[in-house]
Image (tube, rainbow, N blue to C red; front, side):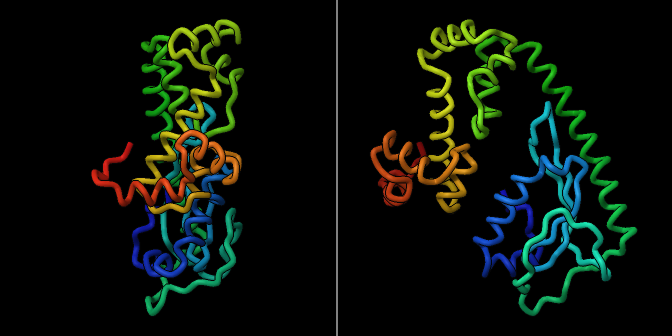
Length: 244
């Protein structure tokens, strides 16, 4: 999520503009990381610069590494992700400035780090897949991809099986269809985020793979008998307070 920014400038801005900062980091940055495989710079609502580099494993963005925050010495060159700079960090002095050469060096360093992390992840992934049975492969795929727009053909391609054989395995292991299994995963994650975080519901919907908040509300109410907001309030006031 967006809690990697714990420096005093970000804390000062997020104290006033938390929702806007969250929208930038959760929607813009996470949504567009895959469009910048070599990384880049982002400029937030306060005008701070931060270098980023996505960590991509088997074609999927699994995370990102960041360097910052900074400000540029004059022209910042090409900044990949830019927010309208309207916020201020109170009475704090601005962060350290970077020259164009220093900005380039930061991106190169993040690229080296990112390549190393990706290499480690790929080796771990290859080992785990080689030793996993079919059910473990299905569980792993659901855990890694439930928050994306996936369908049965995607799982078939992952397993190297045809749709008929894949559906047969799902019935044998779970007695459910692929859409039902995906929705179970999404709802479980949504319940966890509703209980354990203060994130707005529309952010939770996007993080759990739902196409829009309205659809998420309908699915959640059908499954849980209450809207996400009322369910969250009820859990907050419950006698045991333990998450599902």
